[in-house]
Image 1 (cartoon, rainbow, N blue to C red):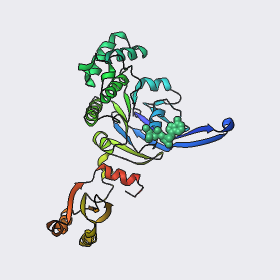
Image 2: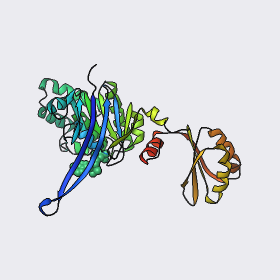
Image 3: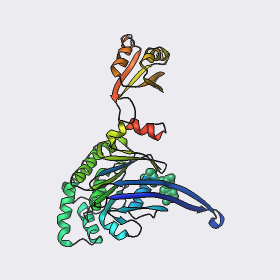
Image 4: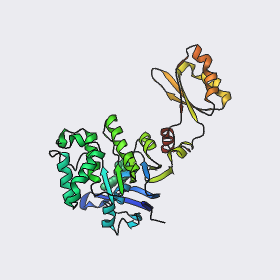
Amino acid sequence: MPDPAISVDHLHKTFTSRSGFWRRKAKTTTAIKDISFTVERGELFGLLGPNGAGKTTTVKILATILLPTSGGATILGHDVVRETQAVRERIGFTFGGARGLYTRLSAVDNLLYFAELYGLAPAVTRRRIDELLALVGLDDRRDDRVETYSSGMQQRLHLARALLHDPELIYLDEPTVGIDPVGARELRKTVRELARRGKTILLTTHYMAEAEELCDRIAIIKEGDIVALDSPASLKKRIPGDSLVEIEVRAADLALLQAALKDLRAKCQTLAGDDGNKKLSVRTRQPEAVMQAMAPFIASQQVRNLEVRNQTLEDVYISIIQGKKP
Ligand SMILES: Nc1ncnc2c1ncn2[C@@H]1O[C@H](COP(=O)(O)OP(=O)(O)O)[C@@H](O)[C@H]1O
Ligand SMILES: [Mg+2]
């Protein structure tokens, strides 16, 4: 059996900051409690969680930028603490934000600079840069100054830079944050293309739709622990009921409506709507029966809005993050 791409074993990380007179007051933050997971070669693996969950800390340890407090991890069999050089040669990463590029230089000049810094053989540099600019879709803007790029284009250039030494693994930390929807879609297309070419990708995001669209498997991380780990399809099956019906009514009609739904034994949840309306969220395996029960209310125009949809990963994510049993 070849080594997995990433193997994380009981990883734990605390940060201690000191303050006060003689800096005697120590404050300890636990960023990662106890995390274990394995990513297979060629897999597109997502770390999904809210801000502060510990995603970036995890990725930084796997990139040898931070040391774990206890526990460990290996990358293609190489230890992230003892074999940092071997790990670094095999990974490329981008962390969100626009820093790290020379904005007054062109894309080509940025990549030439970093290629030299990384000690790339000049014979392969030009060809590699041409390939990468085509891959990330910056071919036609290659000679323009980076300061004229949109944030999406800058992010794609970051990605090209991370790929210069042709790493087997790529870490993308919140790659689409701050990018407009069109730019984000372009970037996701590039990520999918990289996966298609056989790269192993570790992606962090707090957008569940993004994780659902891209990832083979997702670890949902909350307050430094993994609370669920599965394929998007399997995660979705964790909440019973296949459909959600959302019904918006006048607050005054809510009780009547709930009475009409009582016999269906559907799970109802009342949410506040706009302008004094109430929203009833009905989780059910029988959306047709719910619709039928609603028919008289629709006819008498007591129902303001009605929407039927299948579970999305967002429903599961919110239910897991809010601590309800999935
Ligand atoms: N250098 C640091 N010093 C102190 N606390 C930190 C440091 N980096 C991160 N943390 C804390 O660790 C926790 C996890 O942060 P992080 O890994 O950045 O989360 P995420 O990337 O999921 O938003 C947060 O509570 C954060 O405030
Ligand atoms: Mg982060």
